[in-house]
Image 1 (cartoon, rainbow, N blue to C red):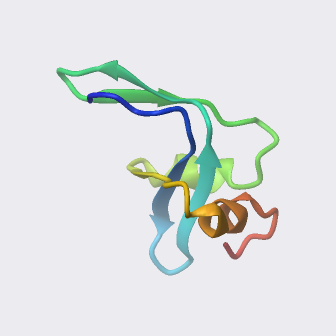
Image 2: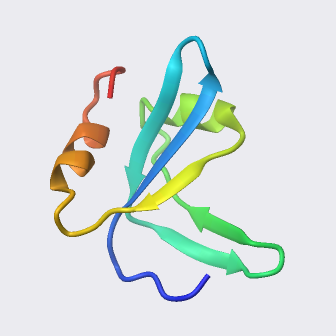
Length: 82
């Protein structure tokens, strides 16, 4: 996986295409294995986004750049529509 600087990662999944994607931001994202490619991350049990992201089964991970504070804020809100 290479080197990932300390930062934030946006995770998104699509548990139900009719309902749209679910997403959240994590600060704990690490390589677990290169072969097969596996990562690990932590999400609080109290996260309102956790159930939808978990149901998705497959996730997309995007490492947020320094200038993407607006993305972090949008995905960190407690509203269902992010």
